[in-house]
Image (cartoon, rainbow, N blue to C red; front, top):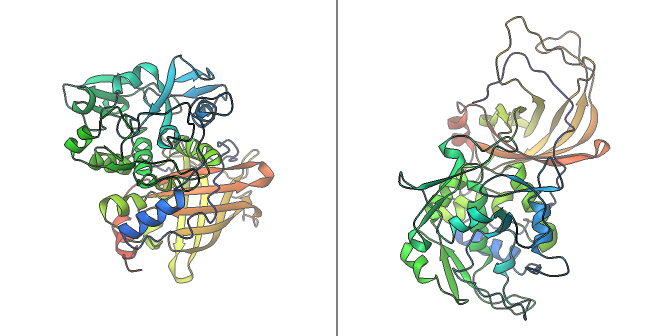
Length: 441
């Protein structure tokens, strides 16, 4: 676990991935008061999206996925879902990687008739399609997602983008075949898979597409293995089941949204015109699938040091003033090892700039103004830090008392993006839970 230290070297924050976070007022009509109203209002919102052909001479799923899953360090390469390896873009066709249906198409929608390109919407829905190593995709086959035991075979992930390649938790595990099998995803992508399948469950509820009239299946997550077995056919069916729901909920909690998942999501959303609500609002998974719709209300229990788990050192110090519904944030980098006792960090030395943000909040979200700051000595009043210069905007959304998402835009630096955050330590969580609100609020 990373720890904040007394010496905090602060650097200019201009190296983050440029991502769009274009949800704006997308969710204004959503009713999260009960599991039923939330599911219904989300389905109405994300239903009837724009279908991209699976394979075509025009823009197809290959084109979009090679943007969505591109290597964040090298634009000419992609990163695969299960192995986490960076490979040169192949532009489609047979090669080292292919397209993985995280909800296997054999459970509800296996037939994509090339003569009728508007026939099968879930088949080409890229919120649940990812690039995967051809062999790892084959080993997974169409087994449900589940925990594995000591008899499972190991398929390691690669060290890439600051994660993967470590111990047992960084490996995929497999046993059995088809519905008798299990596929356990490595820890860095468990949440991605879980939220993709949750999206499919809410997006597809039977009936037909509102514009094209194409029939759509009712896709349902379950822990009932027999129902999953019964929906495994070679024909498109009125319903399809996949799981295991309880495991996917657990993976959703364990693996919060990160920058790579946001990149995939934003790219797909631009083409399809709909979003995955469980990436934008992770807390809604508990309401829809676990029946817990407790509201999140920002409070003094959020006062803490937070960090981005996807990096080696982006830190956020957050202060909430409940009396005036106002928040202050300092965004900096931090050491992962304690420096010598006589070490000093001087803010304002050549090359050092840092940002703060402040502004009002309501409910679970704060809308802040970013300021660029210069000068000062850490933990000292002399020299005095001059007023900061307005530099952009920041939104902080808290899914719960332990996870949140920072979205930011600094136009003059041509930088924007999304940063997942979580607490460094959990001492303040009980206070936050006590103050966070209730289902009626």
